[in-house]
Image 1 (tube, helix red, strand yellow):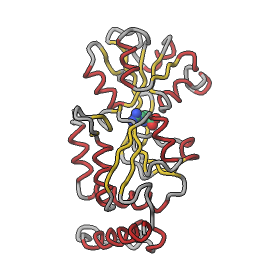
Image 2 (cartoon, protein in one colour):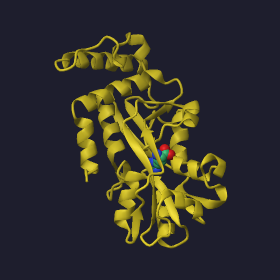
Image 3 (cartoon, protein in one colour):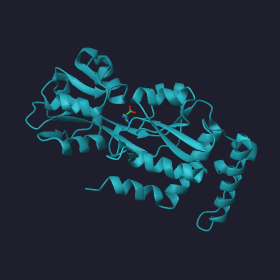
Image 4 (cartoon, rainbow, N blue to C red):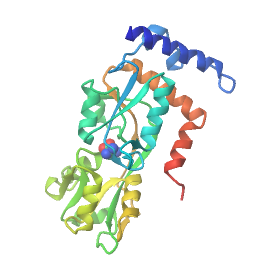
Length: 272
Ligand code: ARG
């Protein structure tokens, strides 16, 4: 029953792609257009698209005062779910748990400003990239740390647990890191920033958009001009969940083509 339902949705998507083909020709090899059987997908819960995330990452995912969720990832996932005829369910958990949940089939997608890395590609599949993330350094305004090179002199750097910032910084100096002894992992980026404000650590390495929001929310902090690393964000899937991945890629391509994606981004990120 579930499979049949998904197949109908896939056909509906193909038809709608064909119907709105005025500006872009319906190409026979768009993912949703490959032969029906290959694009059948099932979801964790019938009629729902479960997204595992860590809603501690503004402006990509955060909680609202009313106890709901908002942010770029949340709204884009909601728009994708609607295109697939599904209802989005946001499952909020630790960042490492959000990555594991999709690998173990507890969620359909992991969407949490997730950086594509070779190590993660070994345990999960990724959609087409939808954003660029930059690892930046937050310090106190009067910090002796003025450039990324000065990070080598930091006694202690704070990062969110299991993030690429943590992975790079805790790596050995031979590999461009600072060693585990010089990096503290916090459950959230906000907790790392609080430790910086309190003088417990010398710097925080975190993605640029959350960094901007944390700096805006706290007095006396700044982001260094020099960048630590440039990365691609993508949606994570269980390995081999190709039919759902292709359907999501097709839905995302439509959202990009019709301007919906950019409208969501512009709602949360104002160009300087
Ligand atoms: N881009 C970084 C990574 O993939 C950090 C993502 C953290 N996301 C979050 N929702 N807390 O490791």
